[in-house]
Length: 336
Picture 1 (cartoon, rainbow, N blue to C red):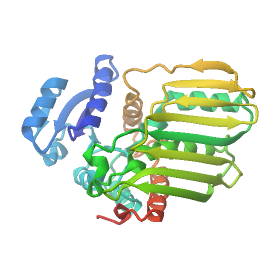
Picture 2: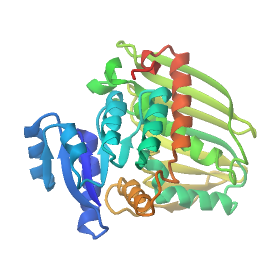
Picture 3: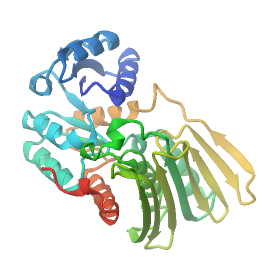
């Protein structure tokens, strides 16, 4: 599978690390093309990372007939436009989270992909991790009893980064960090075998503190689910680093170090005694699992991944919209 990346920023470098590892270890993935609005930047990236092709425009990448899958690695604000560009050229897409600025854009992008018959997936890498299945198995084995509560906090002092400060780039803590806290709760509490069949959020209580530029800086989100479980979530781009999630059951709890890549799973009994620890293995940096899932889906002729279906992308985007609407965040409005 010839892999192309649209954008040369920080996240593109992380994805490149995963793709190169897959290529070197014989997984049938090739780091093929990189595109930037600057040809020089693309050429430098290609030389440094071993890409065959370098393009000075996104259109050239979309028009390359040999590209099998394009990863959209630009800021949130540009995802819809760049996805639509590639879809018009019938390119399969893996789009970095947050998928778009709002649910309206997400719905339109998905509709166009469906019309064109192209593969499309949101790159919410957490949902593809082997650790998710490991935790699920522990819960279903009754290790911590019946799940009652989830807590999650993903905070990092990132307000110095322009794309998080700038409302025009759909900045703020929620779309960049908070989506991980929401996803952590969603993965386990909406699982029909863990949270219960058709378990959905019935009540949302939330508060946000704004950054001087108007984007959200720190957010608290409390969710009540239809089967009675609670989720207590936090995110911040100004607070000290804290990246941890806990699933509480009637017999114990599971603590996960790093909500995004789940580098360690710790299991505790009801008294709070550590009874086990699992460090999931990886091929590179955990980004590889979403790439492999996309490759498998494309080879099987599917247009979406079971781990991150279009319906889930839309569902989460609507939750994000609802939260930001309650905080009066401007970027919820459609830019299409």
